[in-house]
Length: 122
Image (tube, rainbow, N blue to C red; front, top):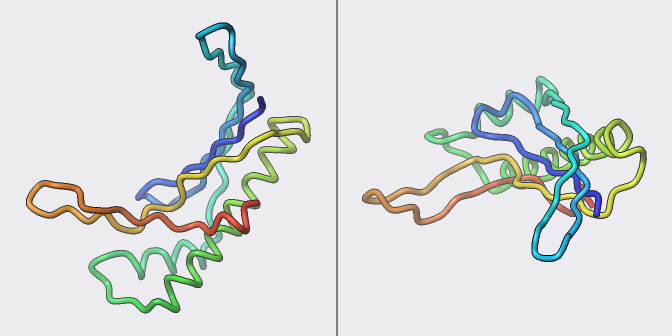
C-alpha cells in the first residue's frame, strides 16, 4: 500500500509530506520510504494562522475559513507528493492537520484542535 502522510506543526511554516510503500510480511509491517518534501504555506495563509492562534480572539467564521484554506493547502501538498514521490499512484493520504490549539488544564490534556478540512484533501 502506498501512503502519503501530511503534517504541519505549531511552527506553521510549511506542510511536510512523506510517502512510503507499506507491506505486511507475516506479523511484520515493512516500510520502504519514497522520500519527503516541504511545501511552504502561502504568505497570506501563514499570516492568517498567526493572527488566529491563541491568545488571539477569533470567530467561528475565521476558523471555518482557515479549515478550508488549510485543507486546500494540504491537498496541494498531497498532489505534489503524489506526483513527485509516488509516481502518480497512492492508496491512502493521511493528515494530522495544522495544530491551532492544545487545551491543557492542571497538567492534563483535555483536547486539541487541528484544522485542514479532509474533504478538500480527498
